[in-house]
Image (cartoon, rainbow, N blue to C red; front, side, top):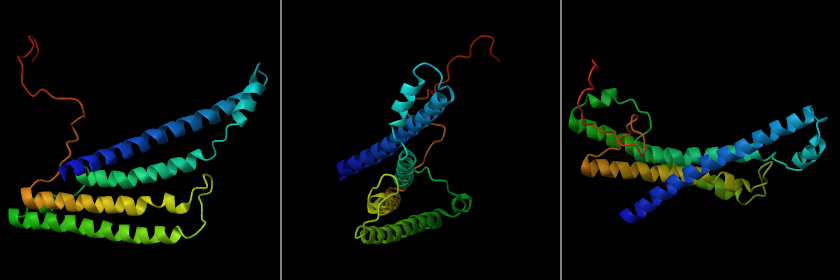
Amino acid sequence: MRFLLRILDRLEETLIATLIGAATVVIFVAVAHRYTTDFVVTYRNLPGAMAAYKFLAGIHLSWAQELCIYMFVWMAKFGAAYGVRTGIHVGVDVLVLQLPPKWRKGTILFGLLCGALFTGIIGTMGASFVMGLSQTDQTSPDLELPSWIVYLCIPLGSYLMCFRFLQVAYSYFRFDDLPHHDHTHVEGIEVDTAVGPTPEGAR
């Protein structure tokens, strides 16, 4: 079971990182193409400008913006599930922390189960919507992708988020362990907490 969870964790992280990286590359290429084309048109009297314009005009990147929007939507849906697993979602817990331990645990579990219920409902409604959409010929404007593929992120991301809520709730119920994200921690950098001798002259 732990092995399967590690595979799921890795797939989740790889998908998010791939979508962010790919969207960044596509946006950079589209912007560079647009500004280079504008430059060539502005200085069309320069040697080789017309040849460069013909080359650039043959590259059609009208689909880039649409693709980036879809990639960011997919990244956001799966990133939300990642946020539940790692505890990086913002929450107001001032009142909860003032409760007695027994009431505090029950309140936190109730909140996690409500999150699982909500995302499960959204996932089910999204799945029904996608199934209905798959019976149509509707496509996206520029990429002409089947619309059901675009909206597939709703049930997939919501069900994954539901699973993460249940996973965190189970871990907290059994082991009193909640994921917490340290905003001061940088991945790959280990902080040496040992206090060394004070440099001479430093006060």
